[in-house]
Amino acid sequence: MKTELSGTEKASRVLLSILVGALIWAAAIDEETFSVDVEIPLMLEVDNNYVIMENTIRSVRVRLNGSGLEMLSHQITSPLSEMKKYISMGSASTFPHNLAVGLVTSDVHLDGSIVVSLLTPDQIPVTVDTVLSKRLPVSVVFHDGIPSRFRLVTVDPGYVTVTGPSSALLDMDSITTEPVTISSGHITASLAFNGNMVAYSDALVRVSVAKADVPVADLD
Image (cartoon, rainbow, N blue to C red; front, side):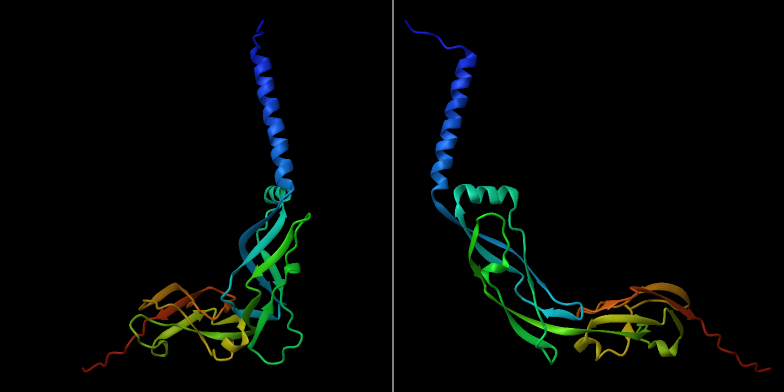
């Protein structure tokens, strides 16, 4: 005599089959070692007295080895998001200083038993310079090309502190504004962008131009 299963019993058997299958699959993949390559951002760090001027390599490829369950747990709980490398400048005497930063697998810190077997690339060429700060006068640039010395111009602030690589700041004797158009009165002007990794203490200045009263000769 054939017994008909109730809906609850059918559902229970299906769930049991799924659980048994999952356990068999988990045990099978846990016996194998898997390799996974991930590409992550590379963050180079240096003391505050120095600045990294040139670094063309912004990411690194990391090869991870581990069992199936370890790899799955790693991806869920603590996926690798970036790699940091500190650069020591203790032996450098001349700047800008060019060097090759070596990367080793121990630079990658992971939880659990996941192993890093390969880093690509393992050498990062960088240029490091010392940091300098100095105060420089602000020079106003006008769209019409007439130099500011031919106008009655005042700038507030007239001097701005600039911080950046020494090799860039040593050649700077002033800071220019973005080109402005003003005949009289005042406007707020932006300081011109500098591509040499310099930072200004003030990003905006107030430019005032006085209209010169030209005396008219009395011919009577």
